[in-house]
Length: 282
Length: 260
Image 1 (cartoon, rainbow over the protein chains, first blue to last red):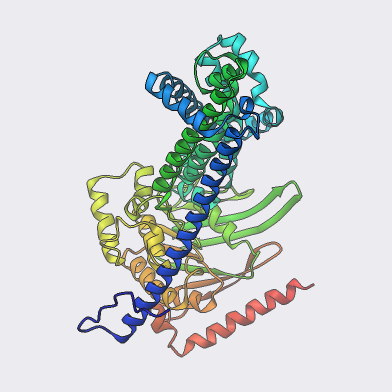
Image 2 (cartoon, rainbow over the protein chains, first blue to last red; image 1 turned 135 degrees about the vertical axis):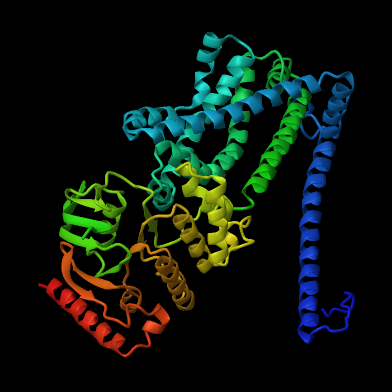
């Protein structure tokens, strides 16, 4: 592998080291591009292979079509629903609920963490309660929310909030506590009180942790929202799954799962992008 | 005569779940205005405890501390403190970092901002205001931390091994810069250090502490011309090595007593 195909131009005034550096870089980049291309090829093979196999198995009746459906039927249904305008309202309701769930969860969790940080006494008092709440499967509270808030958007968001808020509180609080005491000392030396310490040191130092809990909460919030929709909804992707199950339309169930996978991934990627943008400087 | 810093009969006990420990016992210390005093001693002799008490960060178990005749009750703008590392906030710019003290004490006016710009120029940090701490070298960061401390125009500066985390060359350069700045502003300073030659080269007086518990063992006045010279030049003077050996001997005896 010599640099025969790469252009390494000899410029006037170029030092001898420049050429060998440029060649080494070119070789490295070419190897990396090649290995990246292979990864992509294998990924596409796995994807198209499994979809193709599923399609053939369905059409040849190797599998029970009523339960497992097959890709062309699923995409046909999705396309049909998209054209009829019956798909997007469900998607937007679920996306709205999930967004509310993880934003509120992160916000409330951070606020609780701040309260606990503020008062070490309060932190010790609350400790056993938080341990119990954290160990508990929060979706089990769903029926309580429905009775208390009423069946609908409110109790679905409450379920998502319940799933995210405790773990956020714990993670953010421990990051508050782990902030280097010397940064706190800097503020204290200038006569800053507890509020100043929080605003100037604790909160900005924990900002990367808060952003990364946002990322974890995207996934958790989806769990809360889908379970919430299973329980009460008349619209949303969780509702489509339950409805498809009840009328034994598994093409609908699987197409809803596909949409969930797609939208959840997009949402996760968006938060991930936000995280890299916000924490680039640190 | 009145002292810039006066510590009277100060003792401090640290109490934890594991028990109580007497960190320093019966410390008497008077620092004259404009004087530079170093505290040296083995680790665990309570040097940092003494500084923290003078800074008002911790309340001594007994005894008192006065700054310019006034007893202290907490951290004040009259006393500046340099930590072992810069502890610049990595999430914000150099400018916001050096303005931290002024903003907290609500003195961030046009006049103080002009003063900070002048300090930055003096420390060779002009044009780096919008950089982040991670983009600067260790020496630059410690200089920025010095600007952050000096911005409040403290009368007394407490230096807690501020050069210990730097490489040797940077350390020597910073010693010159810090001492020059302090003498120019006629500021009082207390330096805690492990480095005996640093203590001799910078100070007017060196105080040797013993440990378990920390107490003052001996005071050595640094004679002219060493005390008047700048740190680099001081290291070249003939009496420097005699003083170094004297201090070294004192510290060896401290260590020896410890093995009782």
